[in-house]
Image (cartoon, rainbow, N blue to C red; front, side, top):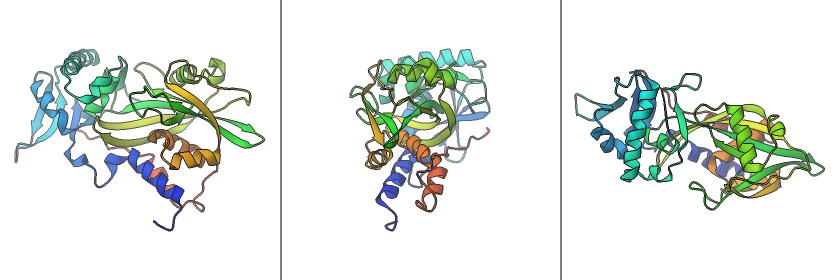
Length: 311
């Protein structure tokens, strides 16, 4: 790999950091499939398993006949509607939070996210956002690349996350981004985030163009994160200057593409935001297979997740 540029090598590290649970050395083999009805919806790490086993009215723990190892965790079939599942898990998670059962629950947000096998399907239940990682269920979000064209060329607006953010404080970020709450459309979500994070007027925000999505699977001390981020591009007027209203962004910078690339590769960005920018660079012709032979590998790792199984 020494023959490739420093930028490409650093970018590959970031891409694989976002996709850490899909790397050969990951603890993925220790994770336990989580099922609702007959479909897998997530992956559970061993740390939360003792708490799940105690909730035997809600979870069915299926063990191997050979060695008694836990083979699968399934939500009880008696919870036969999305509402019943939502209410039961809400009670359990609130109890776990009050007893500090897992570090992920300390950042409780009172924001529900839908749990689905696939995005196009109806929700199987709704769950507190920070608890999604306990069950390794898919999270969805929206990210906006905001840019303008000037005599200096194409420039990108970049935000810096506030020091008080519970995750990746002070890291660089896209101009607007956020998780997709239950019951909200993707377009409404990006318009909401534009208003809250960068004060982009609604009519301007509605002009944001959907340009696809990226998917990846990572893990850390908070659990498992299979994520899909819907991406939007928005060309902003040269006169526009963003300002934050929800306290989640401390500063904004208008940077050249070379400046953005340098800061991405040096690790100054929240990792998944770096992937969103990488996609922008590829789509806008700032990278090619001839100038960067890692490009096909980047694309492969940016569209990766675990395969759902049937019970």
